[in-house]
Structures are given as C-alpha cells and as structure tokens.
Length: 137
Ligand SMILES: [Zn+2]
Ligand SMILES: [Zn+2]
Image 1 (tube, rainbow, N blue to C red):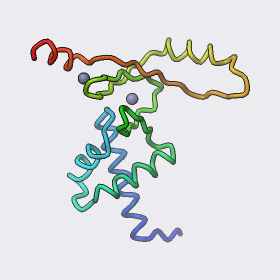
Image 2: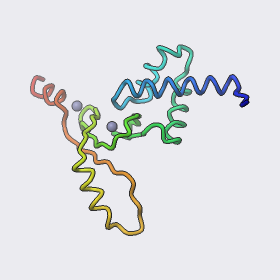
Image 3: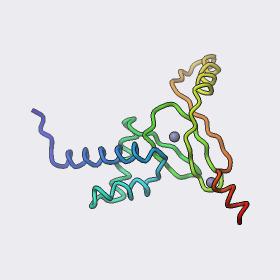
Image 4: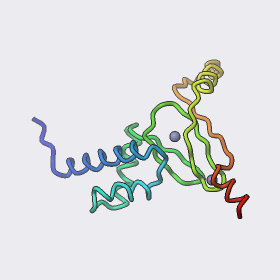
C-alpha cells in the first residue's frame, strides 16, 4: 500500500478544490479570484500556495493558462474554443466555433516540420458592458 504523507494529502485536497472552483466558475479567473473562491473552503490557504498549485496543475495539463493584457488567467475548459477579449476591461469570454477550428486545422495541415494538435484564436474588441458605459458616461 502506498504511504501517502499528510503533506501530500493536503496538497491533493487543495488541488481538488482549485479544479472544482475553476469548473464551477466557467470563466477565466485570475490568481486573486481563484484565491478568493478557494479560501471559502480552505480558510487557511495562502495566495502563494494557490499560485503554486495553479502553476503545478497547468504544467500537468489539468488547467489551461491564458494571458490577457499581461494578466494570467486560468481555466478548466478543455473543449477547443476561442476567446473574445475586451480591450478595455480585459474580460474574456469563450467563443465556440467548430467551423473555425476545423478550417484552421485544415489550413495548418500544410505547414511543414511542425505537428499541430490544437489551436485557439483571440478576437479583440469592446464588450457589451464597456460599450454601454461609454455611451452612458
Ligand atoms: Zn469590457
Ligand atoms: Zn476560455
């Protein structure tokens, strides 16, 4: 039988909670947002620990790391998708289009010396909220 130490169990529990939060959140939370969410259950966890766990999980391929305007965000949506990114507030929404995915992968077939297994496109613009704020303010 494996001898799992207490420290290992603690880490495992933290990672389970982080993944659970990301799945529930369905967005692209920052480290701060993940910390705020996870802290409700793991009251004694530190932000540095959350960060370390996020890095570990993304290295293991259990999370996806996305960078917008110099801010690292995390997500657990592994269905191939694209992103709609607001230039103003940095908000990021998922945009699913199998058509775009298939088309891009087809074009990329001809690229030599590089085997592609995935792709994602970023669309930049202004989100609905920011547009309304501009009109009203
Ligand atoms: Zn916006
Ligand atoms: Zn996404």
